[in-house]
Image (cartoon, rainbow, N blue to C red; front, side):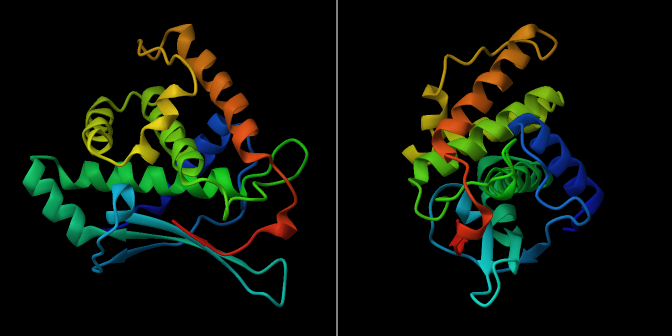
Length: 205
């Protein structure tokens, strides 16, 4: 399974737009590594993980990266009758959404200050909602089906975003999509309390 970094770039741009945030790094895409590791975590973390490390000696030394656990994706895809490539794509979009919601700057030039200590439901909710909106906007019907399958049996932290508003499951061409995106941006501001980048701490999730 290979990583298409052109796809990663496009996802970063599109998700930043959906979130109403500045793309975290305008010059580079986030590093993505394929890993054969397995873990006993729950939810999307069993298939992929977003990590952000910071060198304590410099407030500018952020090292965000994404790990995709392709062996576990292949195994669970077979068990559930899903296409591994689509599962990997949905997981990757979800992890990129973590990256964007964490380090993307708001209109005030600030990021999600308390991302590390924030309630898991808020962090996962932001990534889930952004992923869902991305798939709707780009008419990824097959990937939306996979997203629903992966989310169905995920822990409660991956479900709460549905209660952020009364989401309208309608045709992507309808005005409801733009209204949902706007509502999501308002909810994201409330949960993220965007603040100074210098306060970013190490996070894995």
